[in-house]
Image (cartoon, rainbow, N blue to C red; front, top):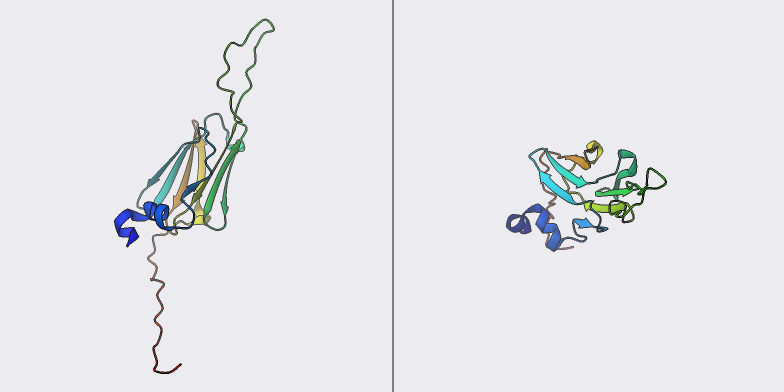
Amino acid sequence: MADTIFGYPLRRLFWSRPPILTEWSGSTALLDWLESPNAHILKINVPGFSKDDIKVQIEDGNVLHIKGEGGREEPQAKEKDTVCHVAERGTGNGAFSREIELPENVKVDQIKAQVENGVLTILLPKDTTTKSPKVKNINITSRL
């Protein structure tokens, strides 16, 4: 019933063990979650991070863990007599971490990721085969 009222993503917010999105470090790694008929698509802001600075892993079979370290440049004066007045771009610890509980229909072995222009895009293909419901009928007898 929860699926029909709220749909898949909201069902887990209200009725599931852990929430869908956990461990947000407050960094600029903001997330958009899109869904097409064939895949879920995650777009995450990762300005200043290269593909070598980012790790994307599957944990516990259905938890996507995305983390980045580095990605910040130290303010440097190019010449000895140059003074740096403001250095906002290099502030912060230069790290982020996000965990996302994946839907049951994701093909975990076919996940792909790429970084381009400061955006990490993760493609999570869906398993479109219909699965039979996990219902087992129990025979009722008059004696145990």
